Amino acid sequence: MDQNDKSYLKVPSKLIEWIIHRILTDFKWLGHPFLKGLRFAWRHHPGPRESSSKEVTAYPTGPYAANRKRQMGDLLLWAPRRIDSFIIDDLTGGFGYSHVTVDTGEVDLPTGKPVMAEVTIGQTVELKFQDEYAGRAYAKIPLSKTGVDAEAFVACVKSRLGEQYDNLEALTLGEIDDPAKQVCSSLASDCLPETVRREIAKARRLGLLRRTSVSVYSHSNAPVTKVFISPNGFAEYYGAPKGEKLRGTDFLVEPRPVETSVKGVVRRHGWKAVLLLGAAGALTAGCAGYFYFNYPLKNYHRK
Image (cartoon, rainbow, N blue to C red; front, side, top):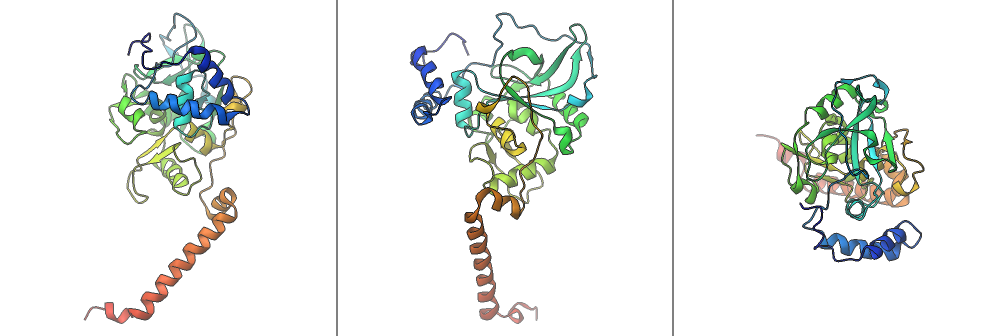
């Protein structure tokens, strides 16, 4: 898509700046209706690709050295900074994040700079310098602290290098998924262990994550969990603060995955959860009693 083609967004730049300012203040009720209108106007346009603030972007050339083992596999969740980023954030729950990259735990030896894996609109999965978005706030989630095998995770992510960005997956929130293409969040989620994807899907089904931050497209007993996890979904699940609360450009999060036990549901939903669980239990008991008294087990015994 032509970076200079903005014909589909006929909103003065000053108004866009005002909208963003409203969203970042207490007057969110003013900013969000405008943002939703812009999102509707952009429904057929994913928007311009993420890019560096520098005119000429340098890419790492390698060779690489994996001498940052402690950071290997960290998720880097980036707060929005432009109108297209704010639309992505709003579309996926409005928790304050619009992009995710993966720290490979490596440095580019010619420059000594740490690198990350990412994919953005109009690009392929690539290794880039972590200062690609200099000055942009982001939260860092060390997956290794949650029991994820960081080396296996990064190896999986790097196996996707060169794959194209998947526009359809981005626009349908994962409902249409080409396994040969990627979006920034699926680059990370597809490489997570199945047990982790299953827990995130379970948290969404229980209403512990925002409605559009995670989209589940498989049954709970499916052998492989098909789930679309947005940057906001990762942030919510692992306990990152809202993006607007980030202070500085490198906020380290102590990951605390959402509890999907009854205790976790009650903690999130309070008395509503107690009533719902009680009603579900009463309904189950009632149904069981009805069938027990009206359809004795002997009727089902084989003759």
